Length: 149
Image (cartoon, rainbow, N blue to C red; front, side, top):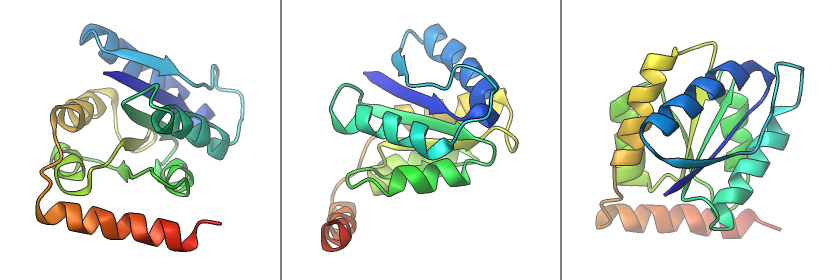
């Protein structure tokens, strides 16, 4: 398993904490940036991490901005990405189990490093249940195909 990670300037410091956590768990990752707290635009980094997931280089992606909202919206514009913006472990677990989410988003100004690590573990430890949820994920994919140009 390899994790695509990225953030804007607002999420940079929390992303550095995420890297430490992934290293402690001996999980491989690719950091798609940014590399400082200098102002950047979150859509650029959401797209880079999402491309890492879609290409198959990475299994999952984790993106961080100030609130987690903008970067999750940007990631979800990319067909094939299902990015869950989570503030608790249960939601992260269900995002994997019911929605087959392949990316996770955080708001660095909303949660701390400890909670983030718990959520990451719940997300990465989860698995898609399939069954009735497969039908629903397929409907999401149909919507993507309908509106993709």
